[in-house]
Length: 579
Image (cartoon, rainbow, N blue to C red):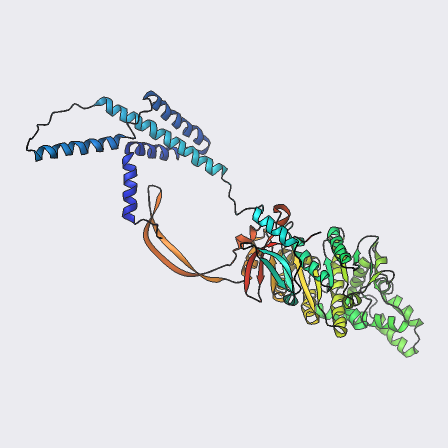
């Protein structure tokens, strides 16, 4: 139904309202406009004084309504006089008009009443507008969940994940369950959200599903959240499994990233420890050749390599000692001696040795020994075990970054070995991915898709990855986005990140209606003229992403779920898994 008034009707309505209270309207408008000229620090006293003056005048006149009623009174008198004249003319009894003296008393009463009511109205209106400006609080939606949402969230948290997918939560409007099919996870998922936005709560849902369905499950946590690791351990124990947990604590499992693989694969793992700089190809070739020779010497000498052993024999002089003990002819030994002598003062080899020292000389170096309860990713995948790597990047930033890269490269090799023996899905969650991100690490995760990897990459912001990698950061961010087809977007404050995330689902065509208005006496009056234009709009504007409800504070995590496989985007209230 059309509610806009044509221009002439709007003017007529305005004229009638203003005309009825004409004297008061004129006084009020003049007083209000004058108050707008008063400096801000004197505005309230001036408005208050105007109200006081108006009320004082009205008190003197016993709150007379002569001013507000002047127009109506005069209109009534005019109509009555016209009627009387018309009646006399019809009866042909002309009446000689009697002169009437000017009523000064009534004029004074009208003037005083109009001033009183006009000043009072102008002062009160000015104070109200000022209070609105000073105390206005802009809200962008509700924060706490409604009773309807609470009830639905309690119900869905007690629901079991279906056999073929996991529950993300409830669609924000209909409150219907949102289920992500397991087969889609092979296309990888990216989860983004600032601190306290509910990212960990979201991650718990696919982890819970993977453990309950008996899939191999691996969590690499770059922030070292002890409670998160313990939660996953309890979930594993609930289904009769024992979780292998590697952390920077005394009761940690051991882990040897060099437990599996030949010299070439082990060489590739160790190469990820060093940043080879702008001449990466040359130095990687040089460093890789040295590592390969070292590992061949280990193999020929019967030395079983782990990180501590590699560091202990890393220097060329130490390797020469092993060569002398080798069971080989002198010609082969001399060849090794010649090669090793060329690396005695190589700066990049020294840099790689320093990286190894970060791990091998740390207070937890004993955890890299192949003894006791030692995590083997290949066996863990084949036996569908649960493995947690909890790396405290706050206390040990360099340590966590180096070890995180080693774990991901080790996982890549383990996936390939296990896939050749048994083809089955593997769920891997990489939380705080910015801690160990690099182009090669992203490439390793992307290629894991062919070996059953269902990866979930989580980070607080895309800017964190860019900041960690410098000039290469933007390229790595684009690489991550290209490698993922599912996106779960939590609240974020970073404008650039919000813009990039809003662009993910693309735009949809929409009609934009523009209406013309004319301004009169501070009012906008529609003219009745409209224009319609086709525009492209975001399914979810960047500002919507900035104002999503954060789980830690609001009690419910609100996310935008973008499914590039089904070309859809929807707002979801995240399910809270039971403890």
